[in-house]
Image 1 (cartoon, rainbow, N blue to C red):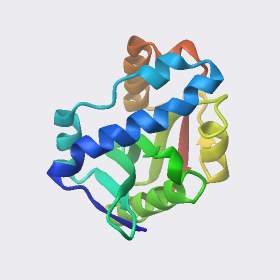
Image 2: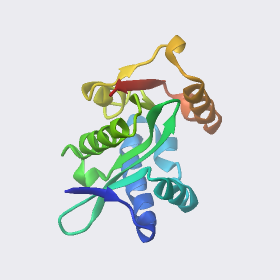
Image 3: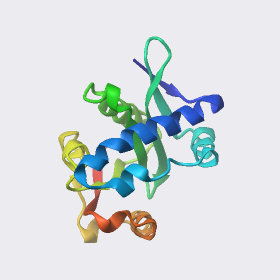
Length: 168
C-alpha cells in the first residue's frame, strides 16, 4: 500500500469510497449517515489543490482509502478519513493519520484534531487507541466550535459527538 496525493481524475473514486464506508452505519441505526452524500467534487478538488488530500493505493493501483485535512487554529484538522470496508482493519486509517502527523509536524503544526461520533466503535474509541483524547468544552478553539456548529446545522449532532486532539 502506498500513500500519495490524489490526482484530479480520481476524485469520483473517492466519492465511491465514501459511500461504501458509510454503509456500516446502517447497522447502528444511523441510516442518515449512510445516506449522506460524499463531499462534492469541487470540495475534494479544493482539498487536493491545497495539499490536504491523500489517498491509499494498493499495489495494483486501486484507491481504497483517503484523508481530507486542513489547518484549523494551529492544528491539522482531519475533516474526513474513509476506508473502503473491503480494506478495513488493515491499519490504513492509522497509516494515513501517521502520514498526516509527519507532514503536520514538519509544517510546524502542534496537533491533529477531528470531530467524531462517541458511540461508534470505529470512531472515537478507535481514535483514542491512536493517541487522541476528547476535548472538554473549555479546550475547544474557535475553529473547532465553528466546525461543530456547521455539523449541527447539517444534522449529524443527532448522535453524540466529540472533538478530539492528538499532540505532535
